[in-house]
Image (tube, rainbow, N blue to C red; front, side, top):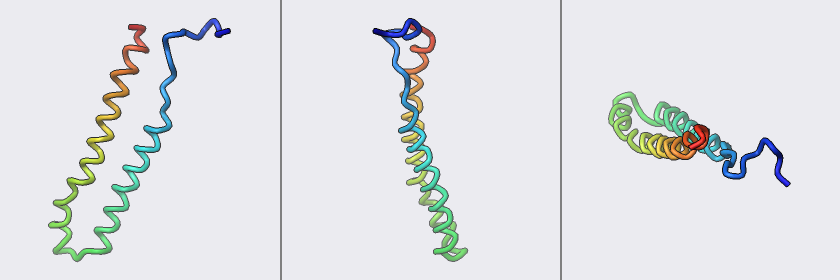
Length: 80
C-alpha cells in the first residue's frame, strides 16, 4: 500500500552522489593549488598555472551533471 501523499510517478532525487562528486572536485582543486605553491618556484608557477585546464575540465563535468539533474528534476517538480 502506498501512502496517500506519495505520487506513483515521482521519485525522490538522490543528492548524495552529487554532493560526493562536488566535494571531491573541490578537494582536488584546493590540493592542486597547494601542490603548485609548494612544488614550483615563482617563475614556474605561471607556466604551470596555464595547465589548470585539467581542473577546469572537472568543473565542466560537474556542471554537466547538474544540468542533467535539472532537466530531470524541474519537470517533475512542476508536475509535467
